[in-house]
Image 1 (cartoon, rainbow, N blue to C red):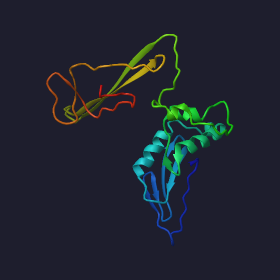
Image 2 (tube, one colour):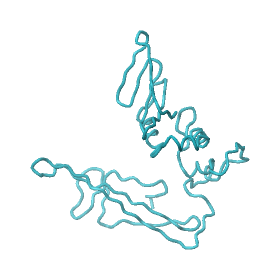
Image 3 (cartoon, rainbow, N blue to C red):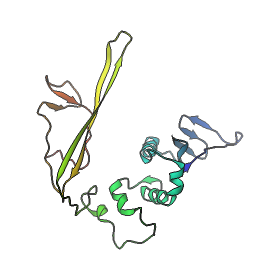
Length: 212
């Protein structure tokens, strides 16, 4: 639920009320919330739920949220929540699949004769029949540096956090074979070889097949 003002009232004589940062615990329920602009996005549970999963879902659910946008698109918000959650559990979070269910043009509730192709297709993140007049691929390398130094100027910790984002304008369902520099070394533990780049905590999109 999305609220502008969150007020939790409990009877001190019959209920225990605990506040821990973005978590409110009472005898009846537990409330997890995140604040976005002047709005609060709240999730409530009456069981011993995985609070890490709840907060991860709330943070990924909204990035920029305004009260006026909710009022103008409240029907779409209800439809999104209905598809995102099933009895309180995250169900469909892939944006490509959600686009097959929900569109901006119409708000009619129609029963489809069969599920959308994105749901039954082996490749859910890419629709079939895509065509471009010119086949192009763009790679964007985004890097950031985190540095921690003491008062003497000595470096205590340093790391480079980066990502490689690809914009693909290719027709059909092609397969791309990409390779990293031979000096790049994937090691989660231990020291890398000399003159090599050590990558830790590397995550790939689901379309990447490392076995090939």
